[in-house]
Image (cartoon, rainbow over all chains, first blue to last red; front, side, top):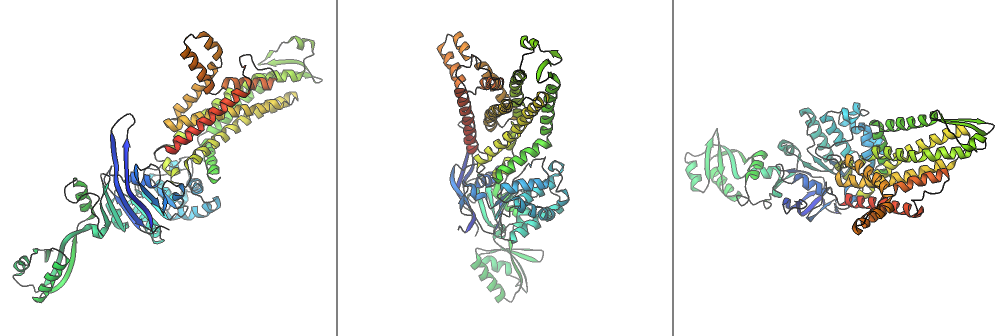
Length: 321
Length: 286
């Protein structure tokens, strides 16, 4: 049994137009692995390759080269989707079906029998707060309600892996919170969640790890706190510091800036930080707070997306562990 | 099996919600009512004393002498109506099922189906079976109702008329296979319907391929007509077979290849269309 729920290796996808030599590279060597029970977010601007990655994982489209597997089964095998739930972006359920009928038809297509679907349908619709709409045709639903039904449909067969493409799209803020809570509950049950979203706050609130795609390559991947840590910059709050602190620290190879009752210290590395703290305490100062300075995920995202190839951190090589 | 049942259920629910079932039922019922009111037979002591079609007396030399057997007249009526049912049945069936693949392939819909643990070919074929089930039930309603009316009005039981429904269903299966192939390639309901009807009419013309070939001088054109005739379904021949089978008459002269070859080549066309549609659907990227 594979230790990973989702794994891709050097995925490449090139779209070509018939009768034309023009080709567009959508994915250029994407390798990632998502552990079982992990909540993983995939971020990226439009056209970065997020949807193509998910489509390859679900065999809706085929990679030009590379390999992908779900729970150890190659994605080319339909069995790889037996334990997978998927909420596509902009999904269109048949409008002539009711919510209950939709769950019944797609549940059976996912391999569970009608009795089991009937048993699970109402509790699921209740959790998603659309139980009173169970016997109303989907065409009467608002966008947010269709989205909730989509989530119910992706959960009806109790999958081990969930792929969610913009799960809160069209949902009001309260509804978003409810969906996030529901997904957290599902994650707590051990389901692996692969979240594809434009909403950085959603990724920040839900994901254990995140990958940022840029022009078909992974520009960064890691835990949110690691991605947002701004290198070797720390915020220090201390009292009883010597008058010549700035000069002393500058002489020791650090740069320091005083602002609003605290100091922002830039060091070479963690060892350097420890040396400076030792000397600071040796000088009689009392340390009250020492925290790494973080960027917002939005800052990280925008910086990475704006960076051009050959400038700054090379794409697909920056991984934070 | 679950996938097949789920697909059939969905197709029927769609047909009901979109009024297709109702339209099917109303149009077929209208045809049946027209037939029931058009045919008026006067039977005395088990013998035919007079017959009217759309209010007009049907004249016959034998009828005048009162020696015509009612069975013969019923065979004649049924022989006229069965080929009409052939055309009506096919048109209604294609019109109500040609959307099944284009709608499946719509953006936002196809993802919902293909993300299930169902191989693509069984998914496509289960839609085909669902469409055929819907069309076959309508043919059974059409043919069965008219058969019952004839039995009720004449007490003559001709199972051949009932069995002719099988040939109609076979022709529908062939054209629906073509509609599925066009649907997979173009994702367009309109093109699927136009293509199927176009082939239906083209094959009606090609039934006269011998005469067309005789009128042509260029060997390439002759070869093309011959190739088209043998590669496309033989809908005209099937229609004539329905007539001959029901009326218990010889096949018309222009069908000089017997019944085996037209049926075999039509079946080969249907299987070829379904196989190609399945292969393309399996390879297609969404």
